[in-house]
Length: 461
Image 1 (cartoon, rainbow, N blue to C red):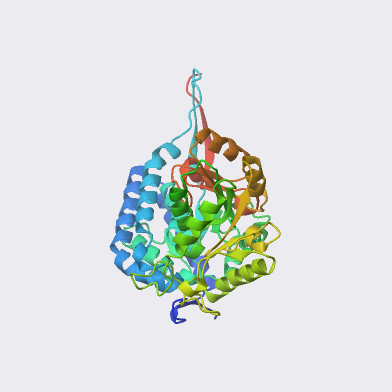
Image 2: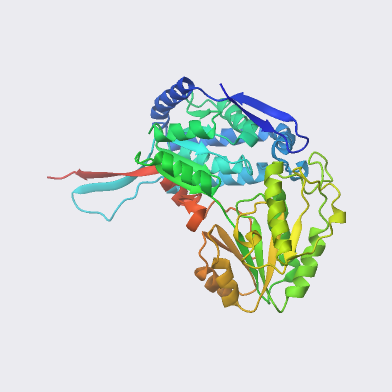
């Protein structure tokens, strides 16, 4: 039997080791989840909502332990307090949305008939969660799935094994039907076999494009529905009328929070030539204020990446860009903790970049951003769309009409004005091109986890 192991990026220590679930354990989990789901879906929505809020309280009770544990697993500094604030916002919003999202659709009245379309649960939802936001990305699917009456099987990322167990512990405390929610330790091969078996009814995956393709191959011919949030290379465009100080502050955070390991983090910036020089000077100044170091220390504002392997990808993209003529704006002497071969990596700001460089075209997923000068809205729009990805894009301006006009032309799932790197639970979280398919959040997220069932009653004859 093979184990899966979480190695800390902080010091290289082993954080957790778990045996991969056997085929018998998987089959038992699925059978008991089916039985529990049949009971759960008959419970009124009001009671399901109460259970989900109790789950939130159980997560809140663990937060003091979760924060340092999370820092050791994937490197996010403890000063940021984990994911609890955003988790609470998201859970409460989804609970409030559920009444409307799960209400029957009733067509125009027709004498002598009663007609409606109900949203009924799909059955068993397999959630394959990533390590970069191990709680938030998981509950994006878990919470609406449970509210809609589904059972849930969770496969969490190896890098954040303990996050899956924390979610399980919270669920176990709130009195759900036995095994309605089950966390399984699975490797990629076991997850693919599970999907191919037709034993689950919907798969929600957040991860790489390669991972999404592997899931599509595994699901081929099963008719299992999929929700895939994959890669991103999110752009920002700074117009000449932008509030530069505010914009710099927000975009630096959008590029480097979580060491740049955000699905919707800012990886490329296009700045109007009229404000370009002022922008890059200010951007470099704010970036240089980061303190790279041990994430368990309160003074640290930038922790290590989740693994040295991920940091090496950023280093390769940086070296290639510099060799092709890019220039770095950040003095490495400010970041003595940056050490080759480790997960500790300084923030990097590159100028004189172009779209022949991988740093501007491929998902780097680390603390690096490239900045280009543009001459017009049209030039910025062309570059924003020159990407295989499309998750979010942001426009920085004082003109909402211009932002909407530009946003209409961007091939993306979400358009922001004067903000970035944020998930609004009331809006659909979705993408285009290699970023994936389907949607979470909003009413549309509930629709992905349910199926329509029509009722047509003749009440007079």
